[in-house]
Image 1 (cartoon, one colour):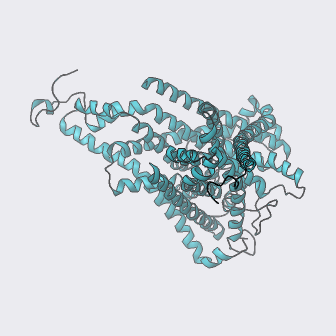
Image 2 (cartoon, chains in turn red, green):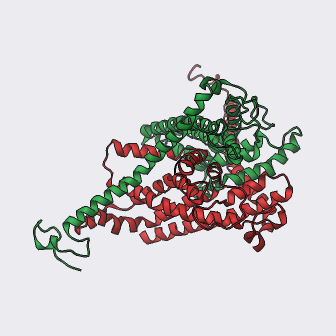
Length: 298
Length: 318
C-alpha cells in the first residue's frame, strides 16, 4: 500500500468497511445476549416441565405413604425419612471436621510442604467424580468397616464428598475476619485457641454456616454415590437407627424415572418438586444468613 | 473481670492460680497442644480420603488385572462382563463416555463462553447481578432432575425432529449435561476474561478497533489459558457425570458415534452393576473398580492440567 495516496483507498470502500465492522459488532452482541438467554430459557423450561407434571402429585398422602407398585398408592415417606437421617448424620460428621480443617489451615498451619500437600489434596478431592466416592464408600465403609448398606455408611461417604466444599467456604469466611480482631485478642493475653474460639469463629460463623448449608444441599441432591454403596431403591419401612437400610429422595426419583409406565414418571416429577422445594428452603436459609451476617459486619 | 496481668512470671501466683480463662499455665499449654493436634487431624482427613480412594480402587483393580490382562482391558472393543460369554474390553464404555462428553462440550463451551463475554464485557452491573445468580441455579439442580428432564422433555423433541431417535440416546443426555456444566464454564471463563488488564483493551481501542475486534483479538486471546482451563474442567465434569447418562443415555456398550442411539458410559456401567445383585469377590464386582480407576485417572489428569493453566494466567496478570 502506498501511504498518502488518496486514490488507493476509495472513500466509499472505507465507509463500507466501517459499516460492515459495526454490523458484525451488533450481530456479535446479539449472539452473546442470545447465549445468555438460552441458559435462562432452559432453566425455565426445566422448572415449568417438572412442576406441570408433578405439582398435582404432591399432597399429604404422597408425603406419608410408602412406595408401592401401584402408582396411585405410592409415596415418599421412606425416602423423606432416609434423606432426613442421612442429612442429620452427614451434618454431625462433616461440620466439625470441615470447620476444624479450615481453622487449622487458616490459623495454625505452618507454611511447609505438609500444609501444601493437604491443600493440594483438598483441591483435587473437589474434582473427583461423585461416583468414585461411592466406590470408596463401598470398599471402605460397607465392606472393610462392615457397616453394610446402612445410613451410617451412606452418611460417611457423603461427608467425605462434601468436606472439600465446607473447608473451602469456611476458609474464605475465616480469611475475611480482619487481623485487627486477632491482634486485639492476643494483646489481651489470649492464647491462640482462646483467640480463635472467642473472636475468629464468632466473626466467621455466618459464612461457615452458609457454606455448610450449601454443602448439605449438595448432599441431599447426590444420587450416584449412594446407589454405588448399595442403598436400596425400594424401602417400605421407617428407618429406626443409623445401622438400618435406607433410601433417599433422589434414589426414589431415579427408581420411578426408570419405570416405563407414564404414571411413575408423574410420581418422579412429584418427587422432584419436593426435592427442589427442600433445596429452595436450604438455599433461602443460606442467603438469609449471609445477608444478616453482612449487615452485622457493617 | 480480673485485671491481674496474664504475662506474669512463670512461678508467680497468678500463673498457678486457676481462672475462668483456661486454668493454670500448664493446663493452657496442654489445651493448646491438644487443640492443635485435633485440628491437624481434621485437616489430615483429606489426605486419608485420597489415600482411601487410591487403595480401595487399586486393591480391587489389581485383582481384576490378575484375571484379565490389562492390554485386553484397555484395547478390547467388546464389553460383556454380565453375559455368559464374558469380554472385558473397556473401549465401548470409553467410546460412550467420549460421545456424551463431546455433545456436552459442543453445547457448554460456545454458550458458556458467549455468556461469559456478555457478562463481563457488555452487561451493565445491574443486569449481571440478576443474570449470574439465575445461571448459578443451573449448577445447583440435582443431576437426577436433569436426567428426568432429558428423558421426558428433550428426547420427545428430538424424536419429533429425527424419528429414528431411540428412547435412550446420547444426544439428549449430552445436550442437557451441557447446560448443567454451563455455569461452571461461564464462571471460570469470566474470571479469566476479567483478569485481562484494562490497558490492553484501551490500547486496542486507541488503535481504532471496534468492541468486537477488542474482544476477539485482545480479550479472548489474553484469557486463553483460563478459557482452556474451563474447557478441560468441563470435559472432566462431563466424563464423571453419572445420573443424567444412567437415566437418559441407556445401557448399551457399543462403538461408533451414532448420537441418536443408546450407548453406555463408564459411570452408567458402575450404576448398572450397583443396582443389580452382583456378588462380592466376583470378577463382575471387580469390573466396577477397574472402570472406576480408569475414570479417576482420566479426571485426575484433566483437573491437574486445568489447575496448571489457571495458575499460568494468574501469574501473567495478577
